Amino acid sequence: MVTRIQTALINTFSSRSPATIVAISLVLLLMLGWLDYLTGDYSLIVFYLLPVALVTWFVSKRAGLLFCALVFITRSIADMAVNGFSAQYSTLHYWNISIEFVFLLIMSLLFSALRKNLEAEVTLARIDPLTGALNRNSFFEMADQEINRSRRYKHPFTVAYIDLDNFKAINDRFGHHIGDELLIKVVSTIRSNIRSYEILSRFGGDEFVILLPESDEEAALSFLAKIHNRLHQALSANNWPVGISIGAIIYLSSPPTVDEIMRRADELMFAVKRSGKSKMLHTVVK
Image 1: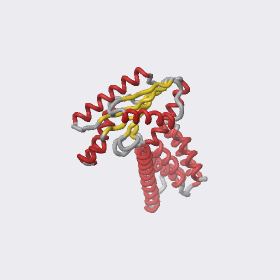
Image 2 (image 1 turned 135 degrees about the horizontal axis):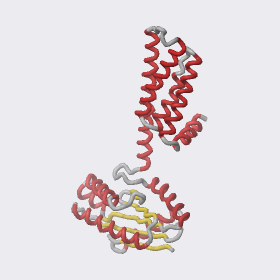
Image 3 (image 1 turned 60 degrees about the horizontal axis):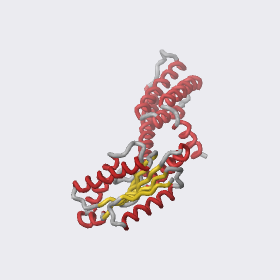
Image 4 (image 1 turned 60 degrees about the vertical axis):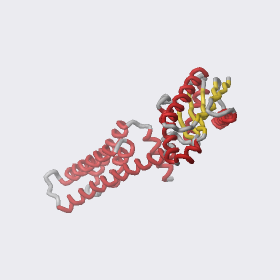
């Protein structure tokens, strides 16, 4: 039950703009201040956590700290309205108000840290930690979305499967740290030549996949020839004796499932391996 409520709240507020979240939180703050005035000396500090949590989680840590200060001001005004603006308060009263303010600050910082850690875990679950490319699972999710979009708008669709030839020899000869450096170089080279909406994923140890939405045969082959050349240049510049084998499948009509696309692209890449490596082979599906 609690999990469903949390999920519903996150789904509801995640789609709202920061300005909307701030506005909603201000309304809640004013309502709580009014309720605070009506109830008198009863502390509603736990309920004040709601607007603080909302802005901290969905806007920013700075906004959360600002709302902590607004809660402090609201609580103080409510107290003065109840007891009179000229009333004298004991040291214990000020101590309690200060403790409530510190409590809100600590909770706001905890909410911010929790959100940051959650975002980091989500990122790690989607990204290859070595190269920063998408991992296999993330690729399948995004590729499925692109396939549906391709079907809807009848756009061409290209997937290229890239394998590094003789990569194991690099690890054996120079060590795994050089192998890691090579993989990072491959990803940075490809990234510097693709557009923001094109997808790069590390599929295995030395295997990569590029997804090119809205790329017909001419555009895809031109791009892949450039990538093939740029990768060879980057690897040769570091004296790494590694070749590049690419199998590409180009769909001019609606593509099937991601699994079927990857199976056919993988078969093309291995056909390149059998024919002498360090080449590019493609097929067009109309």
